[in-house]
Picture 1 (cartoon, rainbow, N blue to C red):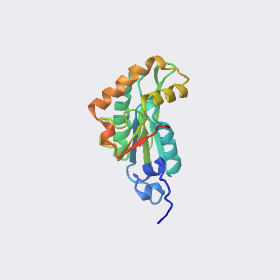
Picture 2 (cartoon, helix red, strand yellow; picture 1 turned 135 degrees about the vertical axis):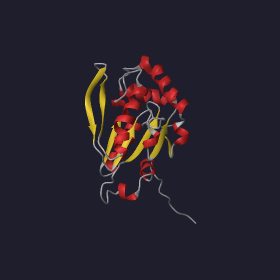
Picture 3 (cartoon, rainbow, N blue to C red; picture 1 turned 45 degrees about the horizontal axis):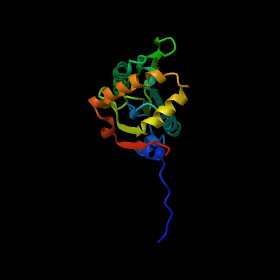
Picture 4 (spheres, rainbow, N blue to C red; picture 1 turned 180 degrees about the vertical axis):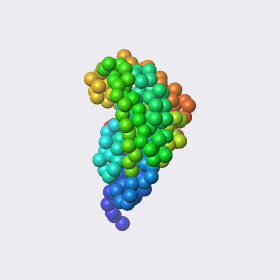
Length: 194
């Protein structure tokens, strides 16, 4: 017996984690958003996947943890800010907010208000960390070899943080030591190109 099987794309696998009525944009907006976490270490492909999910799901919005990190040593503080300031209020059906970090001026910037929506895609290192997990409905872990992630991150940001890679990686490791987001994930995607 011969047959052709269509290969399921990574995006389709992620979308399958959402209830069908949310994937298709049918029915009323729920009282609280479905929160989809996209976690992984720097350069794993979280931002690109988040954009694809938001484009495919009616009423979805992306909350990027990178906007809330408190500089090169503020990974945890940014994650905690999003958990308490955005995810907790959204869980109750209320708007949330956080202070955006201005990476160029190296200081806090404007307040960003996050309105409830059908789906919130929380993307960034730490999306599956302990402060965020109580608010997630599904978690996806993205991974690729370090050399490939490093290359992607440096190409994306013109090598601007080459000297800070190890400091940032240590913060990622500390969050993972507290809670293994990969092991807790509903779906693990290998984003390597080799």
